[in-house]
Amino acid sequence: MWRVLRWVMVALWVVAAGAAWWAAPRESTAEQASADIADHRVVAYQFGSGWHDTAPDRWFSVPSVDVKTSDPQAIFAWRTPDHRTHWVRDLHPGLDPAGSGTLISLSTLVNGIGLLFTVVFLGVLWAGPPPLTGTRWYWWWLFALVPFGLGLIWWTFREYPWNREPELPERRRTGFRGFGTAFVVSLGVSVALLLLRRVFGDILFPDLLTP
Image (tube, rainbow, N blue to C red; front, side, top):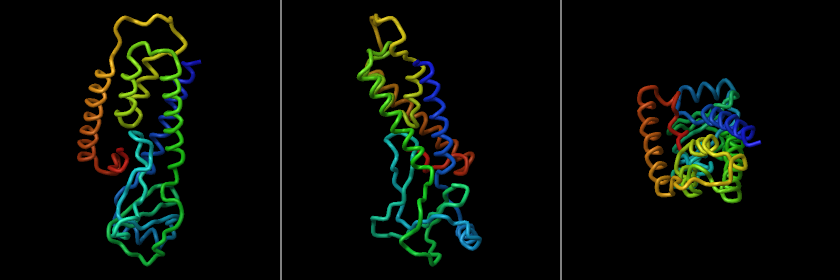
């Protein structure tokens, strides 16, 4: 049963990763915005002062336009029929400032998978049998600190709840080791993404995808 669930979770993670990457807002140009408006390719839009993340913590970022500060029209963001989201600074195309439609159309899918993963992980970790390779706190820190749900994916391949001998090994990875490992991995992922973004640009590695 766990082997099947593990591959289901991996498949859902791939779906969430693809959806988050595809729909992540990417900075565009005023010319492209004007062209999309003229061609009636804008299916949703919003004005705002910036972006904030609405996804579960350390999951794939699901940005939302922030409209609560003193400069409510600092950016103009819009979505095209292919579910891609674009934005540009200081553009006032004469549209209704209230905005229209859902800007990140795949946000429900990405957030839903993230919440499902959280429920499954916490339920198995705290209600199931003790983990074999590390303590509960070891896996908690990898889940809580490593971005993009990578700690959870690693957990699914390292642990086999309800499918092993009941005896625990004398030494398991502790919570302190989990915290240190999670910190190093999180830092490594952030540095790698920064370097990849500088080399390949925001199109392949969008800045607003990172939590």
